[in-house]
Image 1: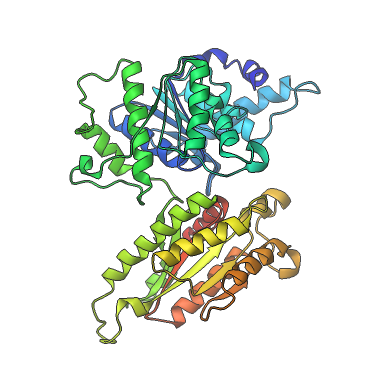
Image 2: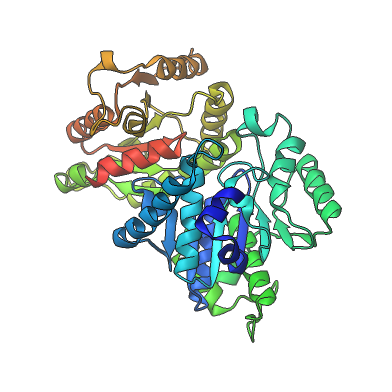
Length: 462
């Protein structure tokens, strides 16, 4: 990465960026989004680098809260690409996909002269391409858990050690409340490097006054608390805190505005299906609840959010229908799971956590659908559209997921499962059944993979 920076002559530009660097297992994207929105609301020009993207690669690079324009993206893309074509070779080959995008992010933010660059770590921390930042203003570690264990290690201490690899000598760092094992690892690394290290407490909802967080779910108060700490320290270290009063009892109006107006697709997102809703003026229809959770801990959080979200939706339906005066809200909802995860993950850890947490909150799925990610085919075969015939698709992993699911529901009635060869075929089935089953409302939880969430969003929007 340092060789690549030299090829692009970006070493000096990166050293001048005022970076907030964020690693962690859960909540990295949300924390970065909150932080960006807060500082933008304070009047600063912001750059936000996150991953992965859901629909368009330009989502990874946001300037002032908006994904970089196609014109600028192409301009900076070819600027980097052409220099690498000239200067790479056998000793230093072309950078891989994520390294290239990271370098492109640095080029965009430096060329666009952002006041602050919020950089989300891709994987781990110590060896992540974003870790070429040598002098960030502040570092943050979000909630830690078991993820990418084949790379980061099989204990929380090992995983925390990799995440703490973004710590720099003497540079302040914040984290959120962690398990004892993870916290000890973070504290040890901070002590070795002389890092002023503090724990940011979850945001007290009362500080928002009459506003609400722009991202939904109880866990977002943890991410918001970290974002407030990171933003406050960035303002202080860059000499921009001015007269803002920030303490445990008060938040500046700019902070409240930033926290309430933040937007991040694919995280606790509710999207009514436009086709079914248009043709169904009565109650019912098809609603997608999308969350890119993909670790045991994040799936538990996702399950709690989904349970609360559909409960809130049910309250809206509790008034009797004009045509069905005796039908009440509880009877008119049918919960469906649309799921996939990467084959490096263990469904024996993921699916029970999701199912059991939903059950504890009174939610039982009537059907589970397992599909391959559509984006996989774009990346692997470069087809303009994914294969549609079952025999063209290897569904062995989805069948494994289905088997785990069926074993969880061996003695239960009223819970079926299916494997579909593609996301379009699954959505087609959902739409047809939702149309035919009015006034029942289909509530579909889409989770297990951010790629899956992105592919579903793409199809819904089309």
